[in-house]
Length: 466
View 1 (tube, rainbow, N blue to C red):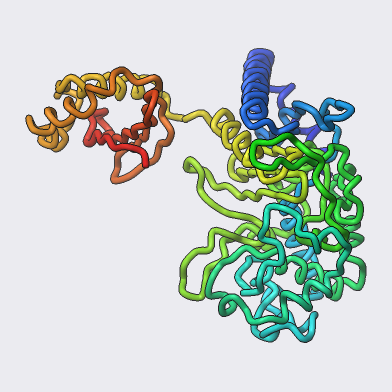
View 2 (spheres, rainbow, N blue to C red):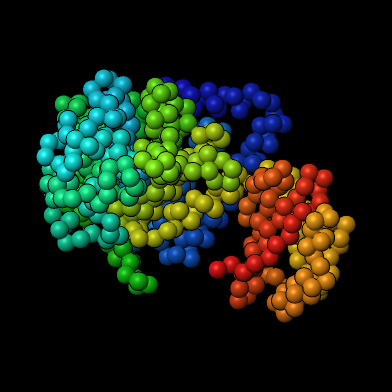
């Protein structure tokens, strides 16, 4: 089903006409060049050995490429067909496994954990949903960004449950949110008990195979399932091969390795709602609310948020030697996958965030002219002058003689900015909000404005960045 959809998408592009096709090809080429530039620059600045990137645009795989060295000695150039460990991005596959079992009538999200795993602390109060949403109170067995000595030896899910899920809870179930790998070890045990088959066998037969993720492998059982070599760095020292965690630790909390392209194909499946029933996808992507009514920012194995006015479901991942980032924008039929082979580094998130800014350039057609106007106003304020025709009566009242003197005395000595970039746009009070980052050699200033529908500025504020 997934492959037929991709073909249909390609045929649709082919049928829109030669001019439109040329424009689409040009846009994709420009995006590819931008992605290449971003990835290479971040790898150079951070020293991370390699990155594998895949981009989904308009519901199809638009670009995939790899950069740097998948292995340093002997050097092996990274390629898009190499598997990287995806770490905790695997948690959404565990959540989907639970939802499939709910569809099968084998369990319910609001079942108590004690139905499947006896003897856990307050197991009759903690629900399966609370495991998947990190609101159970069970303590995380691995909050560190390195592999502890005990993790070099193999373990079992039951051993993790016995040590970390039979001690007092960190908080009452549903009262707080706290990330915990222990939750997903327990969720994997629930999958095994409810399905009657080994956890990874269930994931492979009910999820990976049906959606065609042929590269996906069990990194927990075999770290060599990742073609790229994982690295670790102490402070700013040289890159060194990362140790392998023993089997059983990653399991349902971070067991998968795959190519960036296959993870992007999974994202296409998420966008199309191709595997689960619609009501299951609603559960998967809906933010879980705490007992006090506060939002948790997390659904089931997924962070949920608005980014730049767009709905985003996202998760990062880290296991020994690897970090990863996966951003999906379901309403925009877009996704960004970045896999890297070094742990304890923000490089994958940095690359993904910069790509998202390239993938979604501001839809405001006036953005460039408004940025130029904001820069000109900033320069004028440094001299203590403004063009009052640009402002509303309220803003003109704000810019009193005293205000202009203070602007001039504080901004003038800074000299000319080295950069003036719009960083955000939103709506508020019937006006368009814009935020800018103003760079100087030794400091950064923030400028933000409110623009009325007739184009005048109701506000122009300046403040230092903390």
